[in-house]
Length: 297
Image 1 (spheres, one colour):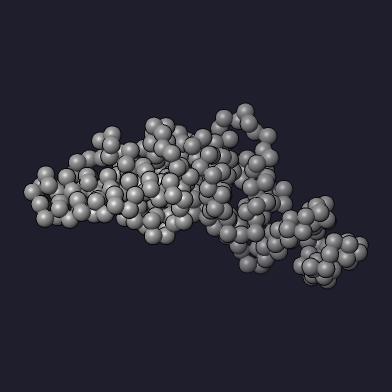
Image 2 (cartoon, one colour; image 1 turned 135 degrees about the vertical axis):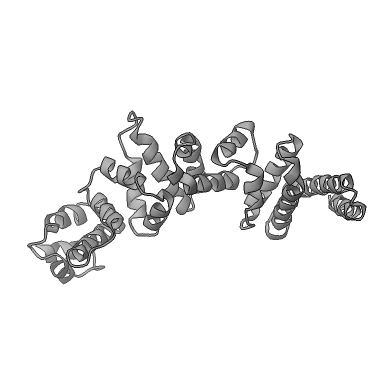
């Protein structure tokens, strides 16, 4: 029976592999038939098979408890509620989910979570959305991650174990927001104690994100939302990102013009800051850089 079913569902695995891996005495033999062969998607079959292999291994060589929990959830032997509460109870939720995101189980779990019927469960739904947001983030689905992070912004600010989740939410917001609104800035403010300090610690990794940071910096400076003691270092950080955007991005004429205008204004502010501290030579150099940006417009 197993050999016949295996042949019907492709040649990617041989029938003897099933026999070798899951003898008739295996408690998961029935799940193999109901799980592997009840779906037509080759990826799902491989995922279920991988889960079964890990559970078989657990009999002789104990696997990580979270891995076991994940396998049982994939095989429908663990309820959605049990899986979610187990994940949320971890000391470092984001690290746990980053590990799962790098396994073959990720897309299958995302599908299961998306299909939940717990829209009215006010306690469990934020947990599900938090896990989904993290999976989206680690799968580079930034727009979807950002949308969910914003929806659960209040929830993810409630626990110390969510510190890396908040960091990811901050990063997703910077990556996805091209036109900053007061609501966006309020969202960022809820994720960290000091936006200015946080931005100064960010590395240049993506031209679009650096451009977004430059636009955000412009708004924060224009509205005096940066402490005077850190203003100069903040401007220099914004200029670092704007420079990176120019050098490494591919822009249309309008976007490039906007980046240069933002750079000009930032250099001008930096010049004024140095002048207020009587650093006249440095102030003059920054003013020259501002004029260089203007000349390229």
